[in-house]
Length: 154
Ligand code: DQA
Image (cartoon, rainbow, N blue to C red; front, side, top):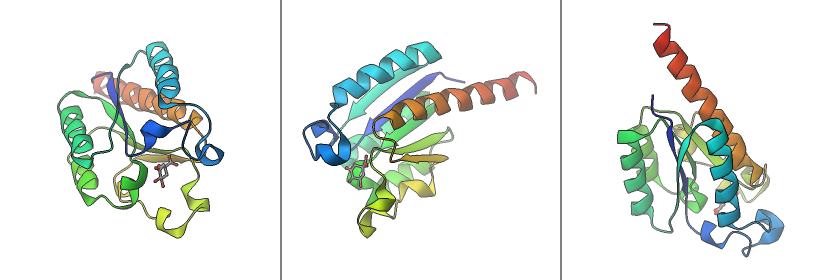
């Protein structure tokens, strides 16, 4: 099984650190990516880390991951609550999919309580701040290891 994982970030996450820091914290997305890269190396994972404000670009990365990756984590931003197209793309993938939110979406406005992505996600992390990114990578590594062990033992 591939040890390549994709971490995708949706709209407005390029403004992390500047945008509503009382909700999303002071770290930038580049800071988060650096922490993820260090951790991925420790876990023996190869990481592709992307952000886009465009729905089609996120869908194209999911299609790319589908061909080559062993797992995917996604913070879809506001597309979480609106995008059937991202759900459909994730439904076309066989590998583990984890959904990550920096804030606890369930403590916020009711329109954030529904997630299309959760209909596919194997696990959801919300409200752990940017620490959730590292937790998602650890879980992906564990799920990939588990799959590999299953493959070895029949
Ligand atoms: C978010 C939560 C979403 O509701 C919001 O639209 C975001 C960020 C989070 O990480 O907490 O852009 O996904």
